[in-house]
Length: 328
Image (cartoon, rainbow, N blue to C red; front, side):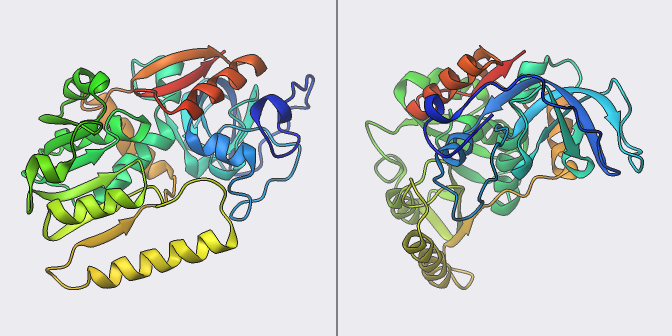
């Protein structure tokens, strides 16, 4: 349970014997068996996003969850007790508790054949990746570069782009080259040794998906994208605490880059802000069930207070290939 804003070791506490609240009419009660860590979890924990979404304490953190249905609301018809389910529970959190009520429209039946740990690795990152591909208008023959190809969102985006018939170039560190190739990338660029501009030159790509952030990603993409190309990003030019000044800079940046990209020949600047949904998660489920997408769990921690603290520290280090998961 989170008691205030701050570092994981300072603001998380174990609270036992919490009352189990019955689900409302359109909610499903889930016994959480696993949860996964995303950067937004520790950003929210530390209060870096409090200007956008303020938490009321105490708050149970973690958005991604997988588990078993234990009760359904009076108006719920899609789910039944004992169903295996998963969700990105958005602003509600709850992945760090034993029982949580999830809005029906955020929940989907778990992919067949996956354990709870693998299932929990999917929701937020895979829905974000699929949204990026949708916004990038990926189709057979599209030439796409994915910056941060080995990360949580990136490793899903590589697989989804490959399944869509695109020619995929992954941008990652050398140590993750084989991993990214195994995901289905046609080629891999070592981000520490070269960049897309030096490797491929102008007019080389239709789409660049950026999962890393920083102004340099946009500048680099402008050199390699064809006329009418699309730069799709889930990150900002600057990371850290969101302040009023940072919001103004972000809105100004988006506006200016969109104006610069106006017209058929302009390079489109497309920021992505995930809106999780059951319909989107069902599309992800279909890709997993059809063998097109496989979540990669880099490391599993126990779903305990100590495990959560350790997992968040590892996530903050930013060197993970795939996802970090907590499992009960």
